[in-house]
Length: 164
Length: 130
Image 1 (cartoon, each protein chain N blue to C red):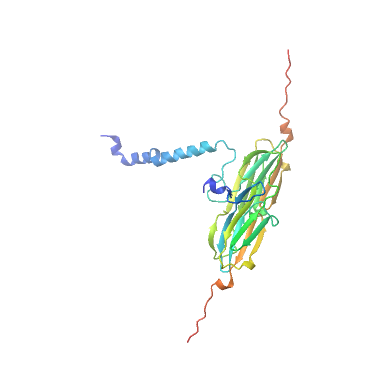
Image 2: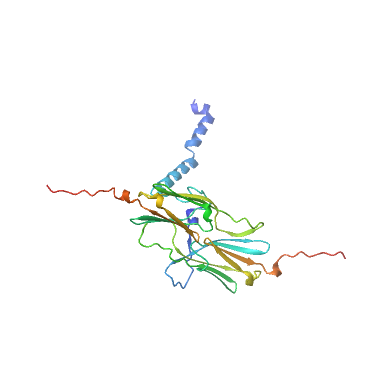
């Protein structure tokens, strides 16, 4: 007699975990997403921080030799609700977009805007001068300027090649 | 929510563009209270000088220009949003009192208050005993 027939429950459970078509599909999907996003340093929206359906700002990062400029769209967020933290190699923008609660008994016709807390971490490859970072907030756009660390830039030393 | 929902939608229906920039459809919330309708539009980058609200017959158009949004001479490291103008139109019904529409702008959010006309507000009719 087959051992499996004696242990139907155990066998079924093992199968659910490993071989069920749904789970294998899920595994496949997960690895597909993992592979797809591997190329990006910044975690994609909706998959990190605020989570599905919540508010998550759009971010642009630009650089030149001297500094990074980070712009984030934060319409309707109060200045006091934004928290910008700069470490040696990353910038974190945290905050909350609050829903207006002044009107009770309202019926919605359109609801396209989203609310909620958000957190985005932007890793920066070059060394930055975290002490000299500046942030401005105007008309719903957050503008962060971070100078690059000049000493870090000087680390690369040019080696002269001798002809013998 | 898919990633597509998080991106700005380009308004391709806008004709007669003079400025060489893209136009986006701002996301709006519209809700109704007892006395008025409220329209709230996310338009990051605009202020009270660069936003326009026009009412022509039944067509309410909100538009915004974003100036100096582009940063020159920098290399793009990571990009999620494009800088551009905003435009969107809505059709109003007759129950809005057109003379009393109020608009305010705060932190890149346009807020329109569209009060209902007196004649359409719900009224309670007093019943007298006959």
